[in-house]
Each structure stands twice: as C-alpha cells, then as structure tokens.
Image (tube, rainbow, N blue to C red; front, side, top):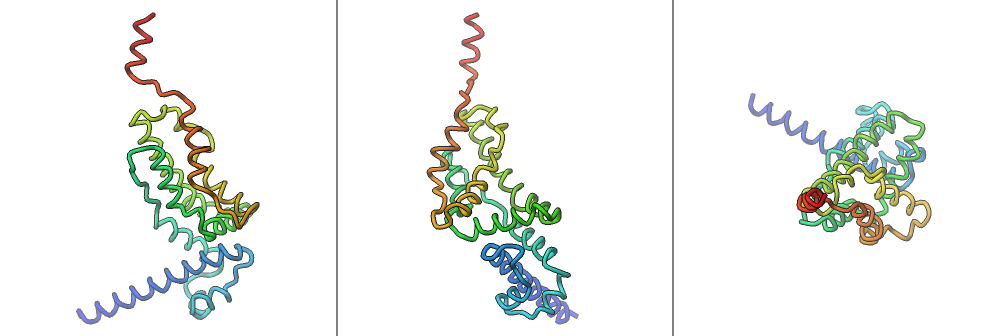
Amino acid sequence: MEAVSVALQARHDAEVARETEILGTALALLAEHGYAAMSMDALAKRARVSKSTIYGRWTGKRPLVVDALRLAGRAGITVADTGSLRGDLLALGRGFDMSHPRTGGLLLALAHAAQTDSDLAGAVAENLVAPFTAAILEIVDRAVARDEIAPAARDLPYLASLLPSLVIARRLLAPDDPVDVDAVVDAILLPLLTATPVRSASSGRGRSSSR
C-alpha cells in the first residue's frame, strides 16, 4: 500500500508541475501577443504538450487564463522593510520589475481584455491589483508609524494605481523606454505622500497650550 501511495503522490506532483508550466507559458504568451491573439495551438507548442492535454484540464482559453492569473497571484508581492518610506517604495517598484517587457505586456493585454470580460476583470482585480494595493498600503502604514508621513496619506486617491498605470502607459507610448522606478518614486510618489505635514504629538500639545 505504501508503494501505491508513493506512486500516486509522484503522479500528482508531476501533474501539478506540468500544469504550472502550462500556466506560466500562458502568461508569457499573453504578454507577447495579447489575450485575443493568444492561441491554444501556440500554447501547446510552446509548452510542449498536446492540445488534448490542455483541454483535458481547461475547457477553453478564458478559464485557463483565469487560473494563470491565480498562479501569478499566489506568488504574492514581497514588501521589504528597509526602514524608510523611500527605500520601501524603491524595493516594491524594483520587485515589480518595471524594466521587464513581460510586466508591461501582461498588464496591457489583460487591461484591454478585462474591459469586456467580467471573469477576467475579476481575476485581474483579485490576483494583480489587490496584492499590489495591499503592498502599497502596508508601506504607507509603516511610514505613518515612523512619523514620516501623515495618516491622511493613506486615503490619497489613485495611490495604488500609479505604478501599474505608468507601466501600461509606457508600454503603449514608449515600449523601448521602460519606466525609471527611482524617478517615479522621487518625482511623483514621495512628493505626493509627503505633501501633507506630519502632525506630531508634541506640536499638537504646543498649539493647544498656546491658546
């Protein structure tokens, strides 16, 4: 019985590995060609599997892409704690890999397709947008706790969408000129986040006592 169990586990592991490879290949093809142009024939060829293998697991392109997005979402976003707001933002931006063509291409491909497909829109929101939003807010909360910025900075509109929006815009307008993460942080994000003065406890007491 133990030998059978080991064999079943090995088979399961092999199937999971093959599925992961197919989904990763699908993400790459999406970035290169867009959702509409990505074909199952191209996927089978790139992943070196038969189309019957793909259709044995997924009924079509949409559910496959949704699963690929879930795979991307499970990878998560590492939010480094560098000890400063600027350092944290730079680490997040660089980890987002702004210079890699796959990042901008994938976001662009899915942003267009999601406009007309609610399933894809939900998958993008859950697996790409939500983790990045949570990462930005975690960084802002740390900076607030360090008295680097005011608590009101957390409520700035469109804060979490700035970096992804710039990736898509650069991909559209200047595909050969990637986003400069340092410039985005220093010229846009930091001025925006530090525009509201920090109200310290001591300054608050001073104003109260002077009345």
